[in-house]
Length: 430
Image (cartoon, rainbow, N blue to C red):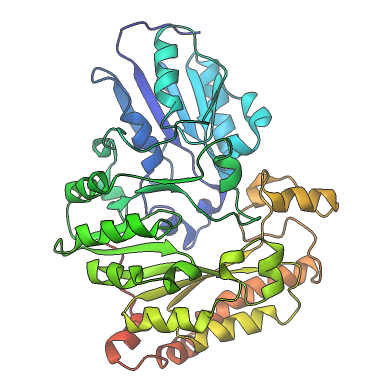
């Protein structure tokens, strides 16, 4: 093991390309939207003398002929095989390799085979400890985040390591961690187990980060921007007068509760990703998505439309109460309620989730090929649909929602030409 002592380190942070990002059509655009803020956050803990580089394979070619002291790789489920290959290469070259991220936390034994050290859970508390141990020549094999999670005293993100011109939305930002909800299909619970599952920056720190970003447009990548309504309200009040325009994500119940969504609109919110997921109450119960139960989805769309906020609706197909009619019902509902854009998913039981454990117990998992766990392929046996029918219905939903007749029909839901035009010419996130 390398014991560099006090000398400067050469550190290479890598985000390997996701398998679905190699799609020759629109997928590469999606995955060049945002820079890897997680890696830039970890880089902030390095010493001033250390030399660091961030390589994101979605926007640039990864070269493997260098000799860094330390390699840190972020692993998602659909880049796991690529990540392991890169890790094995650098270990053979004598570098110390660290793996972290959602997939590593879900399957640590799998990841351990390819790493000198792994990180379980968020890294703000464990990465500084690792660096101290590494410099002393006594790095441990596993660093687990548990108690003491906080975003206070986190150094400013190393945005100087991000090549802004390579990204469609370089002004992305994250001001919270986790989510206060506990849906069975989401593996955020596994990632944050053992400690706080949702926490925020201090409002003044978040506002300072926003002030450092050039231009006018922002994209909040938080899983649930309105998850702490007191924090969100204070953040939006602080942003008023900045003349920013921004996008984010929130849940159905948070949009209907109080006046925080009005505050967001006044501060510049123009587009919101909303997790409707399913129109069937029994599916909501089965997936523990209780925050949507008994909520009036129409009231959500009406409220957002009245504020001039575009809606990107999220919908999941293949839940246990979904039959052959789920595709038509869902698409028709989205169009009739003026949803601007829709993101459809095939239910995917990720390792580490309660949904996956349930499917394993029932013997319904069909494959462990992680490349297929991209919400576009069927990797389990649905309760009421054949796998082929689920895949065909998912493909049909995208075609049907985005054909010109459907776009025009959804646009007619709005009373003003300005709002109708957003369906035909959605404003750029830039």
